[in-house]
Amino acid sequence: MEAAAAASSPILVLVALSVALLVFHIGLQGMLATRELGSAWNAGPRDDAREPAGKLAGRAARASANYRETYPAFVALALALAVAGDPTGWGLIGAWWWFVARLVYIPLYLAGVPYIRSLVWLVALAGLAVMAGVLIV
Image 1 (spheres, rainbow, N blue to C red):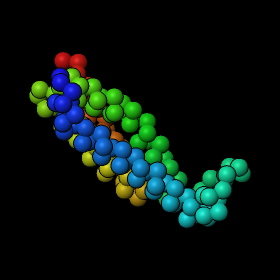
Image 2 (cartoon, rainbow, N blue to C red):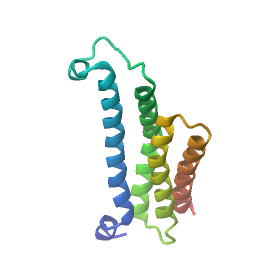
Image 3 (tube, helix red, strand yellow):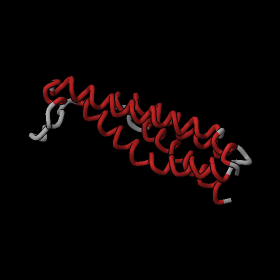
């Protein structure tokens, strides 16, 4: 694939959106921790290793960690699809599944919704599998 074609790949838009979602995760986690522990803690060196004890801050931290577990696979697959091409369009569909599921996952996790949250996580995983399948076949 030519460099210009790869640069204009719609999957790269999802890579950019995924970075925005990563920043959102970090910001949400930081905001909720700061609300609980205070701005002096946030601005300081955090040598005392205090962790937020509240449910929302903890859930935001776990949701962020969960996102970062699959994020490298998404980026690798998306960039591979941008370079190799996606003649069927299924790679882009899988990327959208992953992104939308990861977006929906946040409020479900913060609200403490069981089972549906796990199902949404599986949709994201299926999106990665579809992306990988396009590259393998």
